[in-house]
Length: 429
Image 1 (cartoon, rainbow, N blue to C red):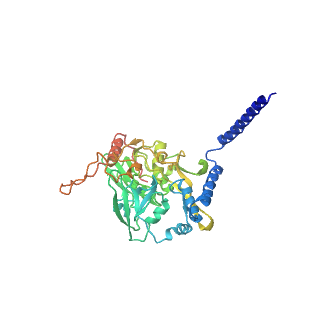
Image 2: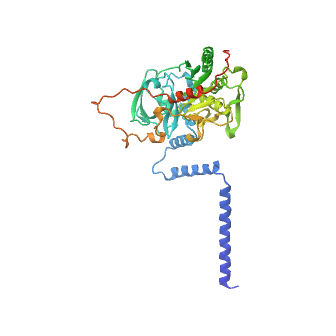
Image 3: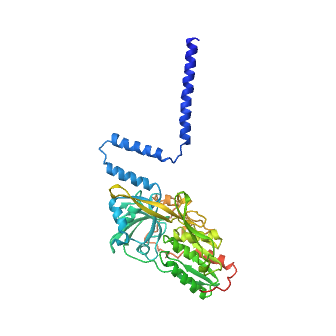
C-alpha cells in the first residue's frame, strides 16, 4: 500500500473517530434532562469561580452568597424567598411583633409589587389604594426586583406612622398616596334583597370565622324569601382554604370542593362537600374579578366544576399557597412554597405565570372602568404623555363631578338570575 493510500486511510479513520465521539457526546446531552440540577450546579460553580478569580476587586463573598440565594428563590414564585438571620427572627416572632401593615393582599407582577386587592375598610382602602395598582416606590425605595417579603417589611411599621407610596395605575398618571399604618379588621359579610326575590350576599373576607358569618347572612336572606342568590366575591383575596370550602358547601351538596397538592401533584388533603351543611338549593350566580384570589377561588372553582351556577366577571388573580421555613447555616432561612391550593379536579390556582394562574369566568363581563385598562407590563411606562390620550383640563375649565360607573357585572348577574326558574321554598336552618 502506498504512503498516499495509508495516509488517506488514517485520515478517514480519524474523521470517523471524531464523529463517533462527538455523536456519543451529543446523544448524552440529548438524553440529559433540561432541568438537570447537576448541570445547573456546574454553571453556578463556574460563575462563582469567575467571580473569585476574575472580578476586578476583592469580592465580598458573604454578599455574593446572599445575592445568589435571593436570586435562586426569586426565580420560583412571588412567595418563596431567602431570609437573613434577622428576618428569620422577625418571621418567627409573627404576631408578637408590634408592627402593623396597610391592609392589602400583595403579590408581584412584572417584578413590581402588585396590589391584588385592598381589604375593605383597611388603611390602604381608606387612602385610595386600588386592586391592580403597582406600588413602584415605598418611601422612596424602589420595589422592582426586591422580594415580596422585603417589600412587606418596608410597608410595616409602628401603628399611626405614615408611609408614602408611589402608585402606577392603568390609564392614569403616577400618583403618590400617604397611608397611615394601623390595625384593622375586615367588615362582616353584607346581605340585601333585590327585586324578583333575589338575595345578594357580599363576602368581604374569608379569614378564620368569616364562613359562619356568611352562613348567618344567607339564613337571613332565606327567611326574607330569597329564591335566587348572587354571591359577590369580588376583591376578596387571601383567607383560609377551610373558610372557602365551608362557604361553597352552603350551596354544593356533594363531590370534591378543593384539594391541597404537594410535589409531583401529590394530593395532600381533599375537602369533600357534606350534604348536611347545604343551606340553599336554588339558582346562584357568583361574581369574581381580578382581585379575587385564594380562598375565594376555592368557591368560584367549585361552582364551575360542579356546574352549580354561572361565574360572572373577570379572570381571578391566581393565588393560594403555603410556605415552609427551612433554616440554613448561620441562622439564615429559605421560605419555600411546599403546598398549593387547587380546585376539586386538582388544578392549582397559582400557576407558573399569570397566563396559567387564576380562574376564568363562565360569563366574562369587565367592569366599566376596566374596559380599556392596559396590561400590567404596560403600566410602568406611563410617566410620558401617550398619544390619543386626552390632556388634563386647565384650572379655568369647570370640572364635572365623576359619576359612579355602572356595575355591569352585577347587572349581568341579575339578568341571568331573572331568566331562571325560582327555587322551591328554602329551609332556613
